[in-house]
View 1 (cartoon, rainbow, N blue to C red):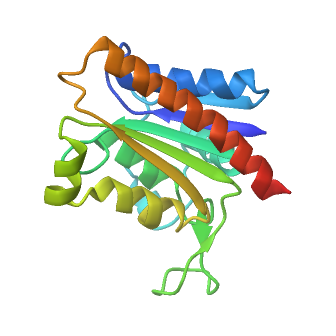
View 2: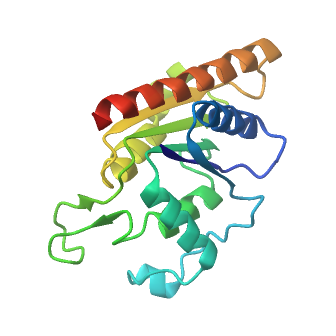
Length: 203
């Protein structure tokens, strides 16, 4: 299987990177062909161009490469911190440019006229892991956990990915090494379970 792992955090030594590397290593150990992208590290440009905003294909070679890998992937993992209930700017820009019309989704009439979308992604399972500094019960009770809705319904299922697994780890700022080890172990388990699900779905 082919897999794509994307991490969106500016610090290379971040816990987000540790999570992403854990998932990448688990998938590689299982024999997957894994493409790994550190968006900040590779200088991904998040700004949607005027042409892209009109639905035209991107001419940016890096964006084109990401689109090709996204379309080919059986497994997808995206790791990023919670920033005001949304992905950080570089991840939002990646979504805008890579989950592009006629690449990740399309419409029966050829353009967006408010109709139901047709998802084009072949990914069988998507794993989204977010870090935050709000306790999980407060994130849900007070804020409604908007990242859950954004990733599951507004992006992934919209583009045809039906099996979405999401985890929120926190509070990261005050976490102990034992807590971080548990979160990394959970990330490894979720990655291995994603492979099992993908295999079941594929049969």
